[in-house]
Figure 1 (cartoon, rainbow, N blue to C red):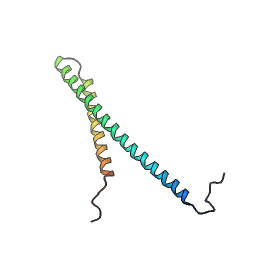
Figure 2: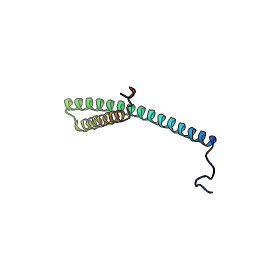
Figure 3: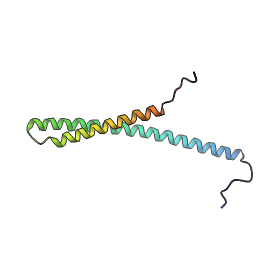
Figure 4: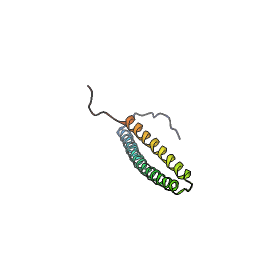
Length: 104
């Protein structure tokens, strides 16, 4: 099967196929961005909840004289993960922000 350049000029059918492919890729990219946003928010909520719950368990264990370092470490790790996720989301948003004001 020959896949090199064509001998004839591209016609309107080829242009329409290329346009449809470009539109399909744009829809896919938009859907992927939306999925990433939803996953990031769910992860942020889960990390915040786990950090809060583990922090409370560590405080309760410390007051009762039980081992408390493990829940405190889990809480700290979840808090660091949450901070990392928020920083990453903010950087991504700044990088993809588009100005709609137009030329000055």
